[in-house]
Image (cartoon, rainbow, N blue to C red; front, side):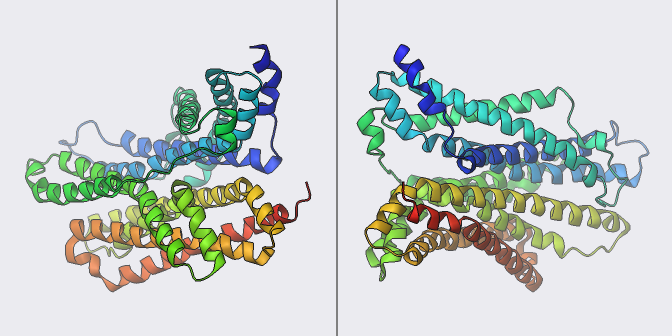
Length: 447
């Protein structure tokens, strides 16, 4: 125990302002998005009349349907925000592995080292979650200006109950601690094991089969959904929303396997050293390669879903009230997804440069020019981005074809989706440009 107390500062020391800020930024964004989405869905739920059989306004009659739309947006956004929190935990822990090895070397046990690392990460999560709640509260007032075609929401309606905020913060901290504990099981907590980065990359085709099973299950369910909802119940719609959420989440299960396969093929056929280096990095850590574009993939899926909403033209009085709500809600969902994608992309790409700084320095000493290092990193990013485009397009339009049939073939949907893809690529370019100076700094570092 004395050895652990003496060496704990090695683990708890700060590794640089940027490296320490990245997990906190990710936890802040995740908490703010979760709180905002839950608060918005609850605002619609509160406006549903207790008795819809009596005389109610046209706005009140639309509330159950709008509540389902809000639920659909929630099941898409919240898992991705939770995933961002988990990624932030793994990101913070990965950069302390050499310190873990040092503490093990001076006598700390696996449990002691792991416990210290988890507590350090929980402190970062607590700081980020508290900041996220503040961001959520500050964003509530501007959101009241959005036009949903109904009576505007108040700030009080968009905020969660006071008791929900401590629970949310505690949940984020527990998520971070659990993610750290799970990540520690993938590291050999011995001085030699951590120093050698003893990890085994295991990618199974089962990942792809699970995703395929979800798609097939959704296709079969849609055949019986009319019978489930024939009595006026919305149970079938709720189950369908759950299927769509599972399919979108399944992209993150199948994605690393696809990156691993594509990276191995690219490494075998690489015509240039830069592509070879980038492909081998991806093959060595396909999960991290996919996490770097997971936010962009999700944003492109949301853009695909919204192409149908954007082409809705009101024809009846009810449609005239419903259309603004769908358009505004859709654009708000896309906006939150874009923020999520920007944070995921920027944080992950910057973190990967920081994590690979020793390798970048070694390659530069061995003779690689800084421009070649940039090209290798660009190759490392391009392959997952291209795969994410294919996966997102396939997922979005498959779901749209199953739900809407031929209506999803409107040429306007293709144009709108193409614009969404361009926006996603712009995020990638921005992330590359923001973190590019770090590559040069790592290559030219003298110590």
